[in-house]
Image (cartoon, rainbow, N blue to C red; front, side):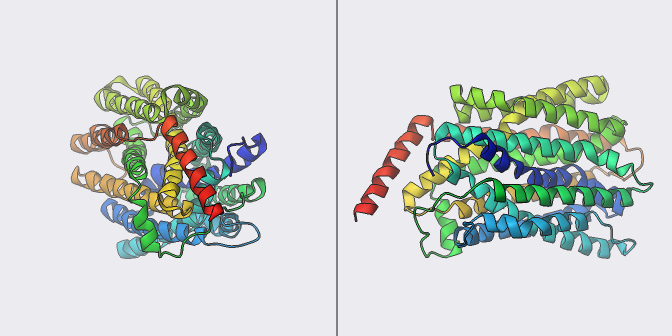
Length: 451
């Protein structure tokens, strides 16, 4: 690893690997809960619980996979073998998740949804944890990491855009939604497997400089919490993820029942994601001037304003107003796509200085533990709030149910965004501080070599 810039081809190849995770996240966040309730026929509370159980398992498996990838030895390196061997299972499990088991009753549906989601999340973990753990190893330059993250998340937004915009047209190929979702699962599954393989061929892992210490999984995970910058960015990232997961899960219900124009959702999502993708280069440039932390706070503040505007005025102002606010939200959302991925490797480097041990995998595993726990909470919260406000699938909703949908899309999520910004205020690693850390690491490594 060095401060040298990666070639554009390597950045593109590495970035393509983000598509599979984005498709997974989009399908889960935007459509899975609605698929389970409205197409498969699983009660909203049971559907939310199934997602909660699956995500809890998923979160637990993340540190384990990170721990194992840190200790993987092969002629391809530590991370790339995981991409090679987990790519196909990931695509297959995605197809399974969107293949309905048929009329097996609420208990059977609940057990199927829980098992299928656990398998899907496990395959997702086996790809994404090693993939993300590559990022800190590709460069140790403060700004180069932001540029790599820009490529990574440009493809991430592209994957999200495809996932959000392609589902409805693909569903229309078949007369029933159940068959349509199976087709979605097959098409997306192929894309997922293919994109997971590209980084295996596109990048080479730099030679590892320091062998991992022989500490256990629990000890390694516990040591990450002594890293204050890591804890702060993880807290902010988790809160923002919860808020965004609630928003994205609720948008389907908002367009279908509050605006009563379900067919307009695809255009709205395209506007949101195209604006986010277009502003990623702007976000990268602005962060070089005002800092990564300030840019992240600014972006999520814009998102907060946008969802509050939709809550307050969207149901009466109509589709043009909602589209305009979604464009505004996309501007802010661009920072969430780039800044955490750029900030996080800096905290991993600080952890190396603290312990003298490189544990990229365990750091990303612990981070994903909390991110996925946050997503699980979001799915559970959305399902429970819908039930509390007496949501009934596929009928005109009561005023109470529509208020619940609007609250999920607005004030309830802003609480999470504000909490994230509070955590970011205390994040300490500026460019100057990071350069000081790099100098301290160089002295530490020189001393180790001389000893």
